[in-house]
Amino acid sequence: MSKKRCRYCRCLFPLTKRNPDQKYCSKPDCQRARKRRWQRKKMQVDQAYRLNKRASDQRWSARNPDYWNNYRENNPGYTRSNREKQRYRNRRRRAIESISSEIAKLDALSAENSDISGTYAMISVQDLLIAKMDAKIVKITEVSMGCA
Ligand SMILES: [Zn+2]
Image (cartoon, rainbow, N blue to C red; front, top):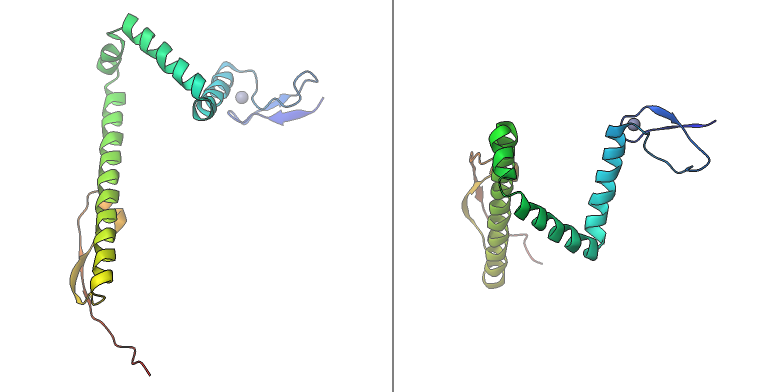
């Protein structure tokens, strides 16, 4: 009997003739991981499934109105981690909006006047994302290429 490596726990498991394409072993954690993966994919590609799932989640939420409040109260680590991830997403979104708006201004500038000589503060995108604003001061000077 041939064996295959489980995608989740990386253990070898025996393949059966009934399910030769099996990718996860039969351990409960591995089967849960398989289902999560299937559901994530389904949510991305199947609009009817997504709408049904949302309606079902909302009905469940209406029947269990205190669930998430209790969950957050009992799992402060989850709450803290969630808050930090949201702050990171907000910072990243603001940084991207700011960069996009600067690029739009530069496009407008180049359309009316190509000389961008001046002194600028340069901040790395990585520093913007972690809200560390150590700027390098750079001077940009137009250099004539000497047309023939
Ligand atoms: Zn496994």
